[in-house]
Amino acid sequence: MFKLVWGMLALGFLAAVPAPPAAALDLPGPLVSSEWLAAHQEEVLVLDVRNDDTSYKEGGHLIGAVPLDFRKARGTTTERGVEITDMNLPPEAFSALMRSVGVSDDTLVVLTHRGRGPDDAGYAAYVYWQLRYYGHDKVAILDGGTTRWVAENREVWGEDEAAQTGNFKARPPRREFLADTAQMEALQTRKDAGILDARFFSFYVGLEKRPNIVKAGHIPGARLFPFDANFAANGTYRPKEELALAYTAVGLGPRQTVAAYCNTAHVSAISWFVMHELLGYRDVMLYDGSMLAWSRHGLPVETQLR
Image (cartoon, rainbow, N blue to C red; front, top):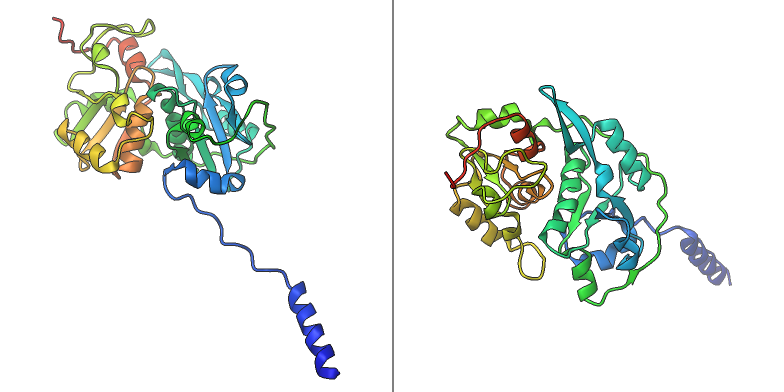
């Protein structure tokens, strides 16, 4: 009888002991697949980065994904006495924005985007760059975005998602991730450096320009690698082996210092993401001012039209 009671007490004691906590989840890398996210959706914060007011609800979004208005992630700054719009936010403003969408210092963040085309991927890539710039390394991008998620018949939702206020605080910025105009001028004289123009061919050669860009053409010495070349037909990033060969083919190797630009830095953030995060280039900067700043400073441009 004693043995039976003791055995029952022992079993009861063991049953009352809480199980050890599960191992902390780690992001598998800078890109996550829809399969991975579907398995871990409740363990991460998904931020849906868009630049419009309607598609988040009308077109649907991942269940639980909190909307992040990309327009709020950009601000205005002054460089050399010239006002430049569409620039990175200062630490306090970026911290407030991240707190408002539920990001805390220990939050695992997965960024998604509408995924209608490569341009949409730039919104997620730029916010990814901002988070890394301000020291938050627990971040990844959903490969293919929301369009890919929907194409795989995964669930979406059409109502607002409430975000709990986070406690995110920007850490000292990683200055090596950012190039200003003076650094871009200095790179032009370095044989161990490369400048990447991430825009379309028509902008590079000067056939057209955006209305806010003063001069058509490209920064002298820049190599062309259009941002859409980073993606396969289904909207996912191309295999790393292909991308490594392609970047090397245009003269941008992993041992160089490389700075990427476009018109306002949001699609060249894709180039930064591919080179620095996927391919492991050690010294890659994003020229945040891009052609907007370069042209407003009255600096020279090259064009194939004259």
